[in-house]
Image 1 (cartoon, protein in one colour):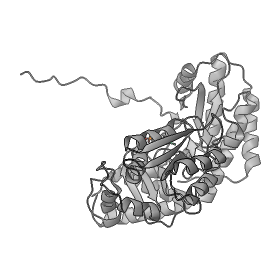
Image 2 (image 1 turned 45 degrees about the vertical axis):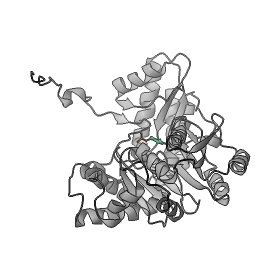
Image 3 (image 1 turned 180 degrees about the horizontal axis):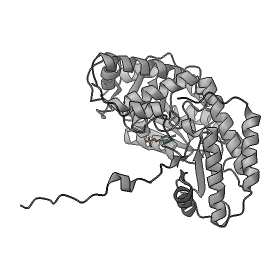
Amino acid sequence: MSQIPCPQITDLEDILPEEPLLMMGAGPVPIPQRVAKANSIVINHLGDTMAQVIEQVKTMSRYVFQTHSPWILGVAGPGSAAMEMAISNLVWSKTSVLAIENGFFSGRLAEMAKRAGANVHRYQVEQQSLPDLAVIQRLIDSLKPEVITLVQGETSNTVCNKNLQEIAEIAHAAGCYVIVDAVCTLSTMPLPMDEWKIDAVITGGQKGLSSIPGVSLIAFSPRAYERIHSRPTDSPQWCLDARLAEKFWHQSSYHYTAPVSGILAIHEALALICRETITNRFQRHLRCSLALQRGIEAMGLELFVPSQARLNSVIGIQLPAGIEQKALLAHISGRYKVEIAGSFGLDIVRIGQMGEQSRAHHLFRTLHAFGCSIRDLGGKIDLPTAMAELERGLQAYTTTESKPVD
Ligand SMILES: *Cc1c(COP(=O)(O)O)cnc(C)c1O
C-alpha cells in the first residue's frame, strides 16, 4: 500500500484577512485582550490552581445569573451543547414538554426535547410578536407539561420575549420546570434567575459574555437539580450528564479533560462583567443599541420587529428595495472590513449588540460602513443624518458610558 501523500496547504496568514474584521454580526463577537490572553494559556485541568479558577467562575456566574443556586456547571461545547445539557438532564422518555417557539433557536430546543423522547407540544408564536399569556395558560391547563422551554432573545429573527417573567410565573404556579436559553442575552439585559423563578438558564461563550466560542455555562435551580438527581434512568448523553459534570465542577475530580484555556477565558470575561457591574453593563448595552437603532431609522431603513417585541442584543434590519442580502454582506466585509450577519431564511441583515460590540467607536464605524455599502450598491439612504442621529442617541440615552476595560 502506498502512503497517502503529504498535502499542500496554504499558510493560515494567507487564509485570514490581512486586517482583522470587526465582528458585528450575530456572534462570535470581539473579545477583550484579557480574554484573548487567558485563552492562550494551558494549565493542568485538575489540581489546586484549576480548583481556585473553578470556584471563582462559579461565584462570578452566580452574580451574572443572579442566583443563589450552587448548581453552576460548565460544558466543553457551543451554546447548543449547553441547551442539550439542560434538555437531556431534565427531560426523558414521555416527559411532557411545552416548547414556546418563536424562531430558529427556540425550535432547536423543541427538537432536542423530541430527540430525548419527550412528548413535545410546540406553541408557534406569531412572527414579530410576543407569546400570548392566555394561550400559554390554556396549554398548561390542557397539556400539563412538566417542562417549558423558551428563549429570552430569539437571535434568528430579533424577537425578545419581553414577557418572560410573566411566562415563568404562570409556569411556576403550575409546577413546571422552566428552561430559558439566554445564549444571546445573558449580561446584555436583565435576567434575574431566582427572582423570576427560572429552573435552568443556558448561555454560550461567544455572544453576550464576549468570550470565545466552545465553552458554555449553565445554571440549574436547586429544584431542577433535585429532579436531575432523582431521574429514573441515567442520561443517555455521557458527556453532558450533569451528575458526571458535577465531579469536575463541584468535586475537583475528573469527568473529561476540561477545556482549560476556554475556562480561563470565560473566567476573564466574567471578571470583566463583575468589574463593570451588571447594572452598568445593561445600561451600556441599552444605550448603544437604542442609539444604533435610531441611526439606522434615520438612514431611512426599517427595523424588522416592532418595539414591543424587539430584541436589543441583536438588531434586525429590513433591506431597502433592490439591495441583495448576500451582496451587501460581502461588500461591507470586503470593502469596509466590518462583518454583519444575514439570517436564516429571512430577508434581513442583523447587527449584534452583545458584549464588546456595544462600544461607541464600533457603532460609528459599523453604521458608516453599513450606509456606505448600501450606497455603493446603488441604494438610497441618508448617511449624514444617520451618523448625527447615532451621536444624538448616545447623548440622549445617558452621558456616561461605563469605563472601557483594559
Ligand atoms: C447562538 C445561539 C444559540 C446557539 O449557540 P451555538 O454556540 O451556536 O451552539 C442558541 N440560542 C441562542 C438564542 C443563540 O443566539
